[in-house]
Amino acid sequence: MRQRCDFTENWELEREILAQPAFSGGTLKFVRRLSANHSQLSEYTFQSANETKFLVVKQQTFGPKSEDVTLLEFANLNRVRSLLGPALAGSVPVPLLILPEKATLVTTRVPGVSLSLILKRCGNRFVGPFRSSALAEIAQRVGAWLRVFQKTTQKPPLPFSRDSYLAALKMWLSEAQTKGLESQLAGEILRRLSDYTAPLNGRLISASGKHGDFIPQNILVEDTSTAVVDFEGFAEHEPIYDDVGMFLGYLFILRARAFYSGRSLDAVRNGFLRGFLAGDEIDEGFLNIYTLKSVVRIIADGPPLTGNWNPVGAAHFLPRLLKDLTSGRAS
View 1 (cartoon, rainbow, N blue to C red):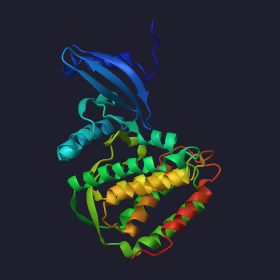
View 2 (spheres, rainbow, N blue to C red; view 1 turned 90 degrees about the vertical axis):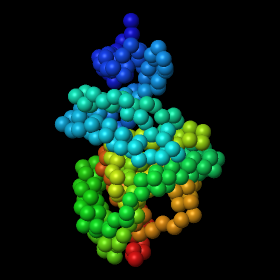
View 3 (tube, rainbow, N blue to C red; view 1 turned 180 degrees about the vertical axis):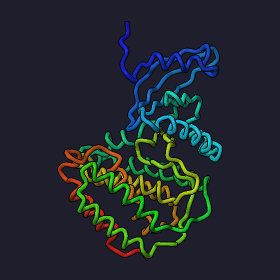
View 4 (cartoon, rainbow, N blue to C red; view 1 turned 30 degrees about the horizontal axis):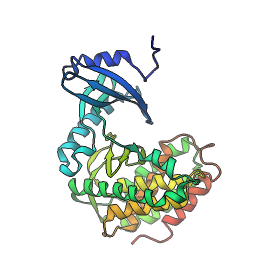
C-alpha cells in the first residue's frame, strides 16, 4: 500500500480534479514535485480515452490572499495568451482548471528545465569556466524571448515617476531589513537612489506587458526553445526595465555567492542583453535603477541573509553594487 506524502500525492485533490467535466473519465498519475518558493507544484500525467496530457497542479500556500492570487494568475494566463502571437503561443502554460477555494490552478506543462537548475549545474565555479559559451547561448535565447514578448505587448511610453519608484524601493528595503539587511545600509541605498533618480523624473520610458517575476526559476529551457511560467505578477502597461532588471538583479545576487563562477555569470548577462537588445541601445540610467530595485526586492522576498551570503555577505556586496550602478549621475 502506498504511503501518502503531503503535497506529493494529494488523493483528495486528485479526486476533485477528476470530478470536473474537463477531466471526467480520466486518470491522474503523479510524476514529481517541482521546486517553488511560495506554492506547491506537482507534475501529473492525465490519461483519458482520447489523449495524454502533461499537467502542472499549483497550490498556493494557504493564507488570507491565496484564493485571490489563484484567481489573478488564472485571469493573467488567459489574458497573456490572448495577447501573444504565434511566435510565443507554445511558450506559456494553458490554464485548464481553477479551484479557488482550494487555491489550486491546473495548467498544461510547458517543456524545459529550469534555468536556475542549469545555472547551478553549469555556472558554478568548478565547471562554469568551461561552460560559459553554452550558457551565453542559452541566455541569448532568453533575452530574445523577452524582446519578442515586449514587442508583442508593446504600449505607449510612460513618464518615469521618481516618487512611485522611491516608494516601491522604500517598501522593499523595509522588507529586506526583516531579512537581516542593516538599517544604515538601507538608508544609504534610499539616499543614493533619491539623488540618482532626480534627473530621470518625468522622462518617457518605453513600456509593454510585464511578467512581474522574470527570474531563472520561472524560465524553462529545452534544446532551442524557451518557455516562461508563473504569471501572478503580470501587468499590461509597465516600464520594460522591470523584467530586464529582475533578470540582471538575480545574476548580481548569484555573484555574491562563492558557489558561482563570475566568468560564467558575466557570459549569461552579456548573452541575455545581446538577445534582448538585438543591436538596439538601452538607457543605462533606467537599467541601473531598476536592476538595483530588483536586487533589493529579491533579498526581501528570499530567506534570511544570515548564513546565506557567506563568505561575501550582503554588507559588502550591496555597497559595492550601489557604487557601481550610481557612480555616474543619470542624465
